[in-house]
Image (cartoon, rainbow, N blue to C red; front, side, top):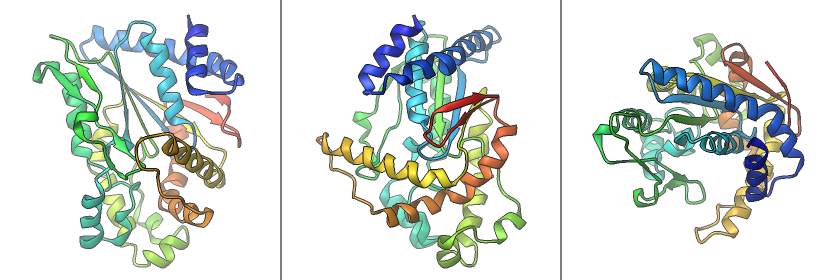
Length: 304
């Protein structure tokens, strides 16, 4: 069964055929483990099973999330797919933060720029399907830098006396991250922090937010998969390629295309994520339940 599902996935996503072997080797066994774990959760009344997928920008989280959704759905399971990105605050909400807290908060990405309350209530709604007949799954539109209108969110049908989904897959670039210490926050990690956050107010705010509702959200994960990049230095190249794909998608869509960023602009954008990305590369390998080791081309080369 896995082979047919994987091939359909490759065809529909225009992936190279080499992806088939990687999917069979790494993701098919993981999917089987999740099926077993989800049935265990259901038997003790703690469904749905919530899988978190964490990894830096460009590490392949979204593709992994969609592939696992395909593999699990093929076994008759109801899967709800969510991304931390789908809970970004609107441009206007971030503009208010930029004016009242720190200008760097105008840029989406860091903790403090997500609606964690919405994320928590969405998970609660999936878990308690008696609250409504359908559950809306939020979606964010990166080309317009705003949430999609609610009428365009996918809907999940409620099930009587059962969670609306058997499995929730939640992916996010900082999923599982813990707050940093005061000593770690003291030193700027790049030119963005040195020049635009010299007093540490922005990174202090981000850290404070990370210590709050984000930890409540992360604590709901039953299992965490970490896609481990070889180093932070890979992230810029990966993000440049990701930007190109996003532009291509926008050019084939009826929606406005995202603004073009030069490499210099991409480099500045990535610096918003650098501190916590480096922190995750140190912390998460010992915290995550499963680690997929990536090479510089984003292919999985090991598991631990």
